[in-house]
Amino acid sequence: MIDGSDPAVSARRAQLDANLSGVRDRIAAACVAAGRDPGEVTLIAVTKTYPAGDVALLADLGVTDVGENRDQEAAAKAAELAAAGLDLRWHFVGRLQRNKCRSVVGYADVVHSVDSARLAVALAEAADRRGRTVQALVQVSLDGAAGRGGALAGAADPEHGLAAVTAAVAGAGSLRLAGLMAVAPPDWPPDRAFARLAEIAAAVRAEHPAATVLSAGMSGDLEAAVRHGATHVRIGSALLGMRPALR
Image (cartoon, rainbow, N blue to C red):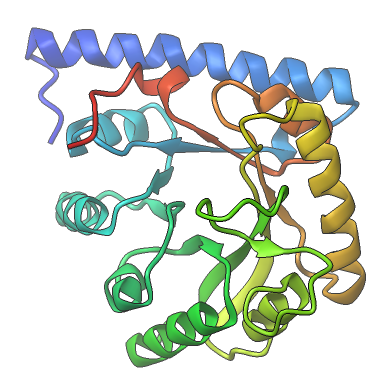
């Protein structure tokens, strides 16, 4: 899939290599500042709108955790790269509709955006039909704002309350409750957002000790996320460049 003799491919690889070095340096520096081992933090390359060729180049550079947020694009990209023989770990990081669960479990190893009990059930049923066990992260709403997704910490809501959603995931045989995911609200300082997430995660781990994954932090706020315990950071523009507008 990678044509090293093509000058454009070589130039893109060099660009990605430089960007990757910069991101890894940022992660390492954030870990040192927080007294953490950089090996505790997994870099997920979020490649939405970028071609499969970029994913192949990143894999050649050692990045094998890949995030996508739109099923149609992700399914095609995952199939193309699997056919090319690449062994990648796919993370579905976008809002997930129940009618997309059957497709998503065909390629995703980890789903970061389970935010309702009904979605947990639908995802579990789809995984069970595939004979797969999928790692699931419960997406947490840090500010309770409607429209951005996320389970509600402290709410007794049997559909969207965090306790109900984590219980639904943990009780599904074909899902494994791996931990939590969150996006910092746009009007919150990152430290406030990720400190709150760390508090919520500690409470969830008290009930579900194996739920140790904390997916938090993107290109603009990864340092704050690492400071507050992120185990996975989802990096797009800092790694791949500014995206074209989504159509």
